[in-house]
Length: 435
Ligand SMILES: C[S@@+](CC[C@H](N)C(=O)[O-])C[C@H]1O[C@@H](n2cnc3c(N)ncnc32)[C@H](O)[C@@H]1O
Image 1 (cartoon, protein in one colour):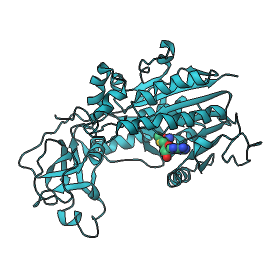
Image 2 (cartoon, rainbow, N blue to C red; image 1 turned 45 degrees about the vertical axis):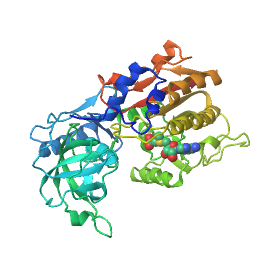
Image 3 (spheres, protein in one colour; image 1 turned 135 degrees about the vertical axis):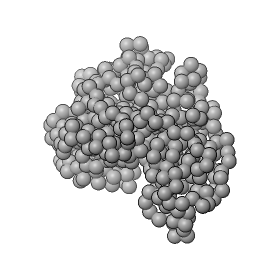
Image 4 (cartoon, helix red, strand yellow; image 1 turned 120 degrees about the vertical axis):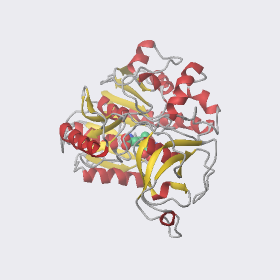
């Protein structure tokens, strides 16, 4: 089945920037980025339910939907994780069927198990009726016109799978906007990921495996003071709170006011009283003018306040698979390490002696990952890299200035660790600050 070979059609220079021209790495990396991870993971809220109960719920749903339901399984050392295997059915386009076109973003969601909401339908051939089974394609060029009613022909059209029509054209392209709801129910896709939509609730959250490993790697303990510097939408913050059984003080910050509302919403839905969330620029989280921390733990903070800090940094997000197309430019890519370093410097100041700092990104870009680690170890000799548990990724990439022993302590989720679990691209580094 056709998948693009690289998402960087607009700015091919980005390709070699990602791994500093290492062509062997690129060969595996680029097609891998375009494909969807085959395994779906949920993080179960063990304060509200059990892994077994959620696993049963998913199994029942899959049984109703598939003649031959894919297996649901758990993972060692991660009692909060439930994984869903891909189905064994790989569809092919059927020429007699009508076609529906979506954009590459919606296409990526479909390949990860989503249905198509009315707003996501770019083109639907005229004469398509409710109940029809259609071929679904993504238009990577972005050139298909919204509301197109003829068959769209393009070399950049990627077949995604089969869907059942739930809404007709007149419901999709109304002057007042599309009728809300699912327009096409996806039946099967080339990724094999079961099309069951998002089952997230306060009991379980659809979350990528590396993000789950990331919060775990901080190893938060009850009664500690913990800082999550870039917290929105709050997926790792709530995980940290669940790991400490709601018995710690977790300060969650995010620069964007509207995003911190999402964190607050998650906190209240999950009844997590241990989290204090603030809209705040974490590049200013440390202040030497603060004599004593506010009793409510409001930012800014004085030096050596926190036992553990998570810096899940803003990044180029180039690990978000499948990435069918990307418009990131080399200049944009260059902008991230600067802010990452500013955030990192604040984290080091705010960490207690003996404290733990986890730095993570959801990108594959070496300048935002291994190169940040090399810079950090050189700039802050009080920091030491330590091994991350549990191990689900591989070591880091080779990088100038990175010792072999240190490289092995990093966890990178990329094409070479598919033997563990086929998941998104991610990077985790864990540091201890010596006294
Ligand atoms: C990778 S996302 C965090 C995801 C989050 N940790 C989670 O697991 O749900 C990075 C976040 O950093 C925030 N951000 C960017 N610059 C920031 C800054 N200077 N201070 C605080 N947050 C910032 C962005 O708004 C974004 O929500």
